[in-house]
Image (cartoon, rainbow, N blue to C red; front, top):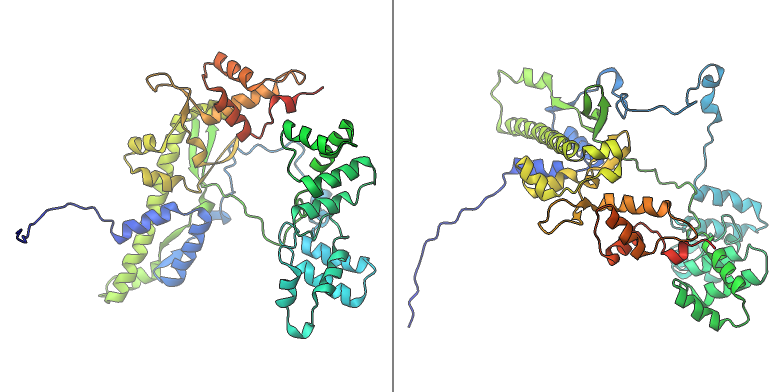
Length: 450
């Protein structure tokens, strides 16, 4: 019979203190999320205050590398009333509400159309059923599903074509109804109604043509082309009531006579400091535990911001050193780079690097890029896992080869594989096909121009 025994075992564990946890959380945030977080800090902690940038702040991007467009200067009398010429486009919902009075509708139907307009989603579809819309309206309105169906028929005659559809098939049919009635339109309507999405490959198209014996090949191809010209999202291209989200770069790289320089875009970084009046007032006073806690908390917030900025700057310096060819030659100059390699070089944890590249952006003469864009696995390495090219560089070269091909004799995937091999990039045909599909480039038989 075994006896119970006690034993002691020493085990070393690593735990993050509260300040370090906050620093990592701040490092992971985007500039927009950090702005909201800082607003909460200022509202909660009296020892923090916001400092304004001198002279009203700096421009979004450093002037050293902003290249003005030709004929972009406006001066003289034109500059005085330039804003008077800027049109303010109403959003989609406002445009639809304005169209109600343009159609011969009675007062009740018009009111029902207004209700349906407010029920549309951002793409212009009516996602909710008429029964659900009627059920969720106030009882005193006494909405009936049949009345809403009549209003929906009226709404679907509005512009843009396809508005108010309940699914893609109905939207395409509504758009086809606006076209001239002929063999091509009838064939397209039949394809959408009965065979939507069943013509993706050449074999599927041949099978469909067998099911449409009275349709010639020219009419069939013209019908497919007509369907391809339709808009799958009725509201696409129209303004939305939702504000547009913009990317604010965190760091900028620009070229000077001394070479490439790195600079933080100060408008993306919160400018905080300890409140000078409070710190001077309480300098000679023994603080209560509550005040002392708030002071320590304020200092921890400032330290987390400094750590975030220094980490992102170190990471940007590393990217500039490893991806110098990108800033000179473009995407084709991108070298393979991994988070693990970067973490080892900077003496940080790989998870820290992952947080640092999360939703951070870099501005340079070639545009604004996410920091994660500069990290890519190596492909076409030799037997010793040395050398190789980044996936981004290979895809860029692939795009270049296809753009320069003979449109009457486009490169097949095998031919593209051979062309890449001549450049020293040895890939399997299926890998080349995968990259081509990721670039949304059709196969050779669809690119061929007869």
